[in-house]
Image (cartoon, rainbow, N blue to C red; front, side):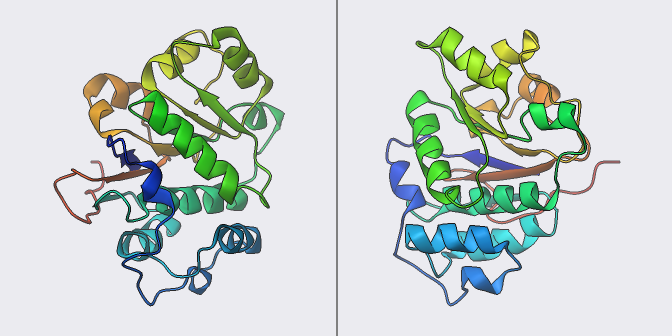
Length: 219
């Protein structure tokens, strides 16, 4: 299970950090060369601790939850895992390809915009269609963009649930889906709507109580 839960206003610092690096290189993982190129173009060679600890778990297809301060690279950690998952699992048919294959939930418009910016940076070589939705503006424009088809959909819960209820997009047509959840949204209503079997989920935040952990399998 994979999710994001950073609500701080300094979240933009979380993606690009050169401090507290480990000796683990991104190219030491079995990543698609296009992801490595995107990381190099963004200036990343070595992992931060949260990246070094969560990437092996997420890349192996397991659920993962982690806690780290703002500015330690949580955003890059889940984006790398998401891109690799999507490259390794091509859409089975046109219907699957027309719906988002990854959903990233953010607690605020500002954080959603920042995650979108960071995703575009790492997506330079992978070429996925990236969508961004949030409340307060651009309702029809955002709706049309999602309806036209996106691979990675980033947004705030209210707007995402609105479009989901209208069947602008669906999460039922495909098996593996990368889902990132904001901490404030980890509640029964949203878990019921967005989480399901066969979906890789990541919970990475500044206030999550468990450090690095792998949740027990569902019975």
